[in-house]
Length: 123
Image 1 (cartoon, rainbow, N blue to C red):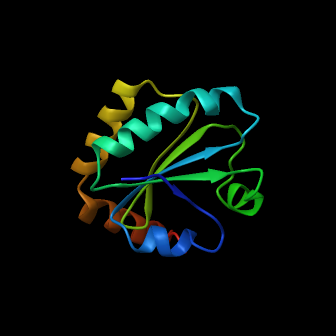
Image 2: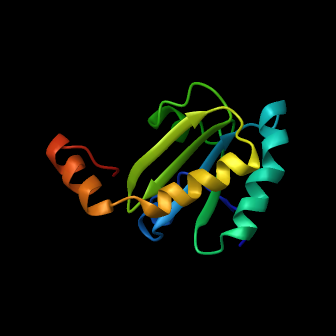
């Protein structure tokens, strides 16, 4: 599956309309971001059941601010509209693959119960 470019206009629909969304916050001037791009794209090809998306923090500063992105690249995984993972820095391909498998295996009923108890949601 191709990597989706997220903007303020399509962000909510993308997160709401897909079970798992892996988001890469990046910028064109960022060398580590550019080095991570092929790894991210390869993972997208191997996992057509997951939505992979990129947010250009230069063009979409409001989204970066909303999610308190302070360092790039930052990887964030949403599952059923809940952020289940967030980490700054480049991941090797094997680590990204393992992370994706862990995201698939999470008990989302438990996560939703915890989120409801904290009063937090992604809107």
